[in-house]
Amino acid sequence: MRRPWITFPSFRSRLVPLNGHFASSPSRSWALARHKWTRRTILSSLCIGTIYIAYNQSSSFRYLTLSTIRCSRIAEAAILDAIDYKWTLTRSYSSQEERTSALSECHSRSAIRVRQALLVNGGVFIKLGQHVSSLLVLPIEWRSAMRPLQDRCEATAYQDLIPLFEEEMGGHPNELFDYFDEKPIGVASLAQVHVAKYHKSGTKVAVKVQHPHIAEFCDIDLTMVQYSLGWIKYWFPEFEFTWLGDEMRQNLPREMDFIHEARNAEKAQANFRDVYTSLHIPEVLAATKRLLIMEFIDGGRVDDLDFLAEANIDRNKVALEISRIFSRMLHTTGFFHADAHPGNILIRRAPLFSRSPYNFEICLLDHGLYFDLEDDLRVNYAKFCLSLMSPGTPENISERKRLAQLVGNIGPDLYPVFEAALTGRANMAGSWGEDEIEQANATAFTRASKAEMDIVRNTVVQKEGLLTSVFDLLRQIPRRMLMVLKVNDLSRALDHSLKTTHSNIRIFLITAKECSSAVWKDDQRRIIRPIRESNSFTWSIVGEYFRCWWRYETTFVRLTFLEMVLDVQAYNIKFLAWLKGLRSEGLAGAHRAASGLAYT
Image 1 (cartoon, rainbow, N blue to C red):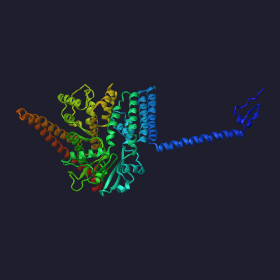
Image 2: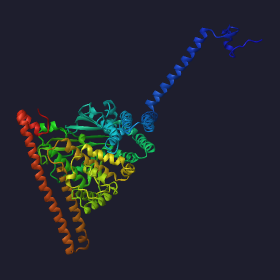
Image 3: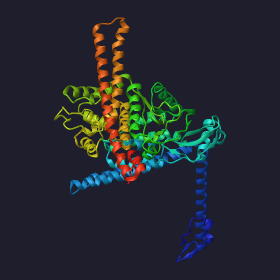
């Protein structure tokens, strides 16, 4: 009988019998193992080397690799969140309190996972997180988790910026500037700012440089954002955010074009050229698509009370000037800054020959995103704001709802939410049909308490079918009106953070004045146009012109008188605080107390 031999003849002479069979020797086993290990090592090294060379030499391969990694981070967070929510929502709970607590913890876990993915990816995803943090109707756990993204952005290393300078400006930073600080003084989601001394002008400048990877991954990131929002809609139909992805795809290219930003700054400056104002827009010295050189502003954040106290700047006047600047943008010029927040509003002592009526200038930065309001929308919005400051008679309430439909496609069911968003107050009692006559006059424009904002959020969430309607509305409402709401929030938030001593309605009196002026100018155009077209006029036209003029003048006088009364009250409050500080710490304590700062 033939013995069973291994079928490889070349190895037969090296086999030895074992229990009637033949097997390989220990030395042969070791040789085979070493051979396999060596082959695998060589193949692995070749693969790694090929990938390394392709990554560094082929931009397409590098783009594909990094895009896959970036998308996988978002996909991982999305899948884990879906599993977490499914598990949390399908479990059984002994009480409603236990279910609410579990859902809150799920919100927090899911939001933190998404935030980490957004933070690592940076750029467009940071921008998405910033938008999410400002959406009132989201669970508070999500908004709180996303809020740190407002000021947590990774800086690009100086060495990675050099190729961008060479491509955009045709030279190394050392050739363009006498001095260039490699460490940025500010980092945002799309760009960072360095201090330098410009060689051409010999002046100190701020150099805004776009993160190099932003343009490279913008398209794939925006696509991934839209897919992620679509996934959210699929799993949670009531949370309709696909409009946010569309909005980002439309606006981000504008924000990433610094030539466009320079033009916006120039136009905004021209709109205030004939106005006695404290607004200052830094001069642009040079601009390319990804690099901006502008005047350096040596100042502090607009909400820095210590800086204001040291510079002897009245915080009440600062709040009023900010309201006046943005009210003029919204209601008079119709061309407004749509991305203003305390981080890009600086304040400084007014230099010699300044046009400011006060001892300070408000310096507005970051002009990448502006919107135009069409005349009809601008005037109707001004009329709507004025109607909110009028007594809540049935006629006025009907007019408010009519104007809300014109400016924001707001139906009667959602009107209370829209009003709350504009005024910052939960003036919603009876607004769902029980009592239509709700007094929402000027006193409604006061600071919203936490309880009131909870009323807004809980009403929207708990009213059956309303949450879906709100998100449908967010998708349908004109994008410009969403940005207008954001500007309104800025004025209220700064008035609060500056700890002003005037009444809460004081900044809205400025808005009312600008609205009255806008309506009066529109009345003039409307009445005079037929006269110019027909070269004749009637006494009825004259009478209408006089009535419109009289309404404007009487409104303006009443508002001015109320402003004077409220300013006297604000001064008295500051003076009382000054006296308390004087008794506690002398003149230093008096100054700190009057400036809104703590004193012992």
